[in-house]
Image (cartoon, rainbow over all chains, first blue to last red; front, side, top):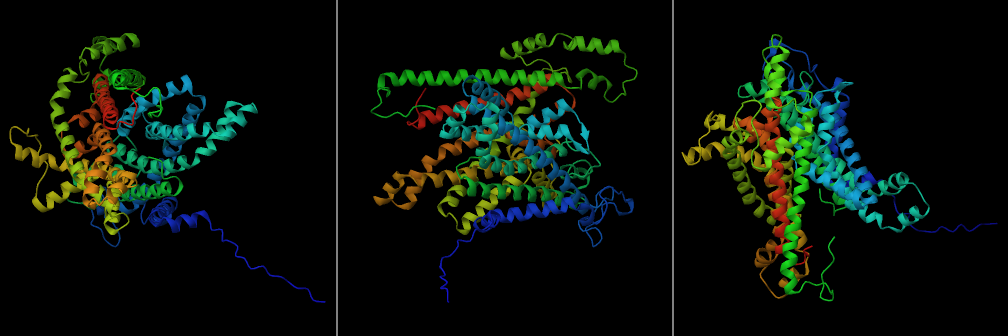
Length: 297
Length: 340
């Protein structure tokens, strides 16, 4: 007895991983992602990647030129510039990610709530956001730093993070609110209201997940902003304090006095800042094109 | 959201109601600025009062160690600056003055805030204007080219140039500029500022570099806006119509596309101009310029409350005014926007 095995010839459409899909469709964004991942790896494994300890002072090697031992030279304390940049990535990325996450999440929740409640609540929240929007990012951050002072917990300056996150909040709030206003009119929102769900449940279970596309886009775009803000604040002496390695800090203080004799002290940290911000901008831009081209950053 | 105006709409503004609705729109927008500015004033004032640093303590105890300064002296000084009054009294005294154009006296120098700002404003304003001119000169041609030759190597190069402009911190760019000028021309930033009317050449050669450092980012933002704006306009029906009736492509871009694409670009340029102080805060530090940005950083370091309040208010008044003018321009230039 033979059984006829019928083979149906149809091609199963290959389901490719979304990350792979993104990489092929947005090559520039992929390049940004690669740089970001490389930086994260360097920051996470700084102990093994960095050739020297970033804090060890070596007066014998003050202001040494870039060489085989010190790839990017040393600063006025004889500290290895390359190692300080690698450890500085840790500071920049940690503060950047945490501040961006904080600012975007708070902004998204407030934006959704503002759109959901509407009416007077919306009007008041928009009024407050208009006030916050009329400050430049750095001016607002400086003011908040001045008000809060420093408060270090687990090696991270909490108040610095708040100061950097806070200016992002109204900018995220605006975009998210606009998306949420459209969602409010969806039929499933009527269903949720008819089912007598609580405000919190509707906001967090039904609305917040649906604004995740703008949220993700803003999150990546604002990591670039927060890294830049941290560098600027540290440069002005209002951010991270010595001896913690920070890119902005490496450009201030002694660097400002000696950089004419030892240009490597400022050239490389600046490249590090630019590269990080560049990578996040590239990635954020492509992510927007890929997910939702209509969003204005 | 305004309702769409169409000719079937019974509320469509006839010529008679047109003028009065326009006036109402202007007035409405103008009145909307008041709560925002009041909010800014309240926020800054009370935020600063929450600050742990006390201006008197910073001033008297700062460098001297402060052990030999008695409580009495401090209290006297606080009384002199009016810091011992209830907060709301302080606020109304200050805000009442501001409304009449009196920003009070700097808590650090003892001179009037208006004077301190006045002597520095010329410099900062000049750098800002030069940066704006630079940004416009770069952004309009580059953005248009990038849009016309979308996805070609020209577009790619311009896009990389402008994304890099967003990434490079202006203070670092300033340091690199100084470094290059030093090695090539052995030029160092002069210690004193030469006003334009005194010696225009010296003045320009001094301020062009900070303007360049701030202007790169500025032009990058505007270039990107110009590109996306032109790309959007090129999709419109009237562009196809213009092409269909045989208008030269160059004229299509110059007359039909660029004009209509300019509005969002002008908005970005205006808003960025209002926010240039943010870039100046760090750039003035690098170039040794005694301008508004530097004054702000110093005021924060010295807890000079009246100075911080005045500067923050100045920036936001400027920002809100630019927004107001932009709203009006949109309404006047684009007849599709209904006055409300």
